[in-house]
Amino acid sequence: MQESQCLGCQLANNKIETQTVYENELVTCILDIAPLNEGHILILPKQHYHDVDDLDEITACEIMKTSAMLARLLKKTIPA
Image (cartoon, rainbow, N blue to C red; front, top):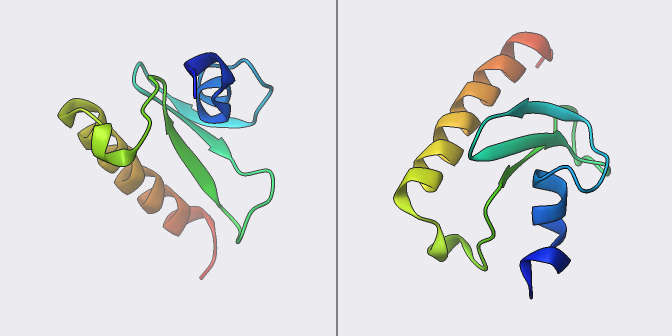
Protein backbone atom coordinates (compact mmCIF):
# COMPACT_ATOMS: atom_id res chain seq x y z
CA MET A 1 0.00 0.00 0.00
CA GLN A 2 1.30 3.42 -0.89
CA GLU A 3 1.58 6.04 1.82
CA SER A 4 -0.97 8.26 0.05
CA GLN A 5 -3.54 5.43 0.25
CA CYS A 6 -2.81 4.51 3.88
CA LEU A 7 -5.67 5.45 6.22
CA GLY A 8 -3.29 5.71 9.19
CA CYS A 9 -1.04 8.14 7.34
CA GLN A 10 -4.00 10.22 6.20
CA LEU A 11 -5.31 10.44 9.76
CA ALA A 12 -1.89 11.12 11.31
CA ASN A 13 -1.08 13.88 8.84
CA ASN A 14 -4.45 15.68 9.00
CA LYS A 15 -5.60 14.71 5.50
CA ILE A 16 -8.86 13.53 7.09
CA GLU A 17 -10.66 15.51 9.80
CA THR A 18 -10.13 14.00 13.26
CA GLN A 19 -10.43 14.87 16.92
CA THR A 20 -6.76 15.22 17.79
CA VAL A 21 -5.94 14.99 21.49
CA TYR A 22 -2.13 15.15 21.25
CA GLU A 23 0.41 15.70 18.51
CA ASN A 24 4.16 16.13 18.14
CA GLU A 25 6.66 15.77 15.31
CA LEU A 26 6.48 11.94 15.32
CA VAL A 27 2.94 10.95 16.33
CA THR A 28 -0.67 12.10 16.24
CA CYS A 29 -3.17 10.85 18.82
CA ILE A 30 -6.84 10.90 17.91
CA LEU A 31 -10.13 9.80 19.40
CA ASP A 32 -11.38 6.61 17.74
CA ILE A 33 -14.59 7.15 15.75
CA ALA A 34 -15.90 3.76 16.95
CA PRO A 35 -14.44 3.51 20.46
CA LEU A 36 -14.38 0.17 22.25
CA ASN A 37 -14.53 2.07 25.54
CA GLU A 38 -14.44 5.61 26.91
CA GLY A 39 -11.09 7.24 26.20
CA HIS A 40 -10.20 4.97 23.24
CA ILE A 41 -7.33 6.82 21.57
CA LEU A 42 -5.32 5.86 18.49
CA ILE A 43 -1.60 6.67 18.53
CA LEU A 44 -0.47 6.98 14.92
CA PRO A 45 3.07 7.52 13.62
CA LYS A 46 3.26 10.35 11.10
CA GLN A 47 5.70 8.42 8.92
CA HIS A 48 4.38 5.41 6.99
CA TYR A 49 5.27 1.96 8.32
CA HIS A 50 3.91 -1.23 6.81
CA ASP A 51 4.16 -3.18 10.06
CA VAL A 52 5.05 -2.56 13.70
CA ASP A 53 8.28 -4.52 13.10
CA ASP A 54 9.31 -1.79 10.65
CA LEU A 55 9.23 1.02 13.24
CA ASP A 56 12.55 2.70 13.86
CA GLU A 57 13.67 2.80 17.50
CA ILE A 58 12.99 6.52 17.95
CA THR A 59 9.40 6.28 16.70
CA ALA A 60 8.73 3.08 18.67
CA CYS A 61 9.99 4.74 21.86
CA GLU A 62 7.89 7.84 21.16
CA ILE A 63 4.76 5.71 20.75
CA MET A 64 5.43 3.98 24.09
CA LYS A 65 6.23 7.27 25.85
CA THR A 66 3.05 8.84 24.47
CA SER A 67 1.02 5.78 25.45
CA ALA A 68 2.22 6.03 29.06
CA MET A 69 1.50 9.77 29.18
CA LEU A 70 -2.02 9.32 27.80
CA ALA A 71 -2.72 6.39 30.14
CA ARG A 72 -1.82 8.54 33.15
CA LEU A 73 -4.02 11.36 31.88
CA LEU A 74 -6.97 9.06 31.19
CA LYS A 75 -6.72 7.51 34.67
CA LYS A 76 -7.03 11.00 36.15
CA THR A 77 -9.94 12.11 33.96
CA ILE A 78 -12.09 9.01 33.44
CA PRO A 79 -13.59 7.34 36.51
CA ALA A 80 -12.76 3.65 36.92
